[in-house]
Amino acid sequence: MFIPLLRKTLKRLGELPARKESEVEELLKNYDDVLLDGTERPIQKPSDNETADEYYSGKKTHSLKNNVLTLSDLRIVWISQTYEGKIHDKNICDKENLRFPKGICLWQDGGFLGYKPKNVIIKLLVDCIILDYLLA
Image 1 (cartoon, rainbow, N blue to C red):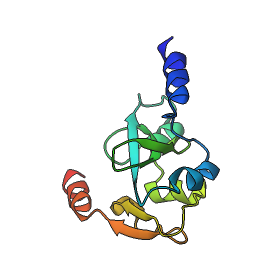
Image 2: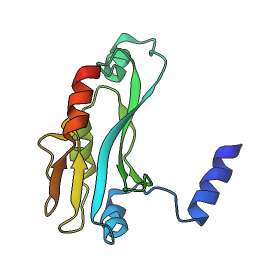
Image 3: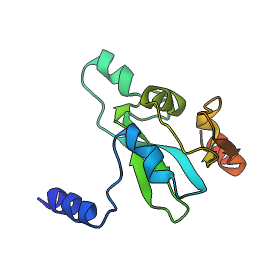
């Protein structure tokens, strides 16, 4: 009931995150920095074992995953398609085929090692990499 109203309001305010990778370059053209991160939402374990394996994230839970692009003011400007918990953050980006404005600084954590889109400056969030390691 409230979700359609919220979606309509966010869209009217220009705050609804993009879902199409083709929109990312245009959205970010006036920004110098953007943060790329993966998110997980826990779900109930699927009853079918094969399906359950696809949704097991390796972090002791079954989940759905998305990647998000966030501006420095914490506004989410893009959300990837939703994937099974098993998929790695970098692999989501490989599937999504994002294009960024030339010269933008892309901040990312260790989940994206090896992901380097064309014409961007990669910055690693070292503290996040250490924290991710300690929490795993």
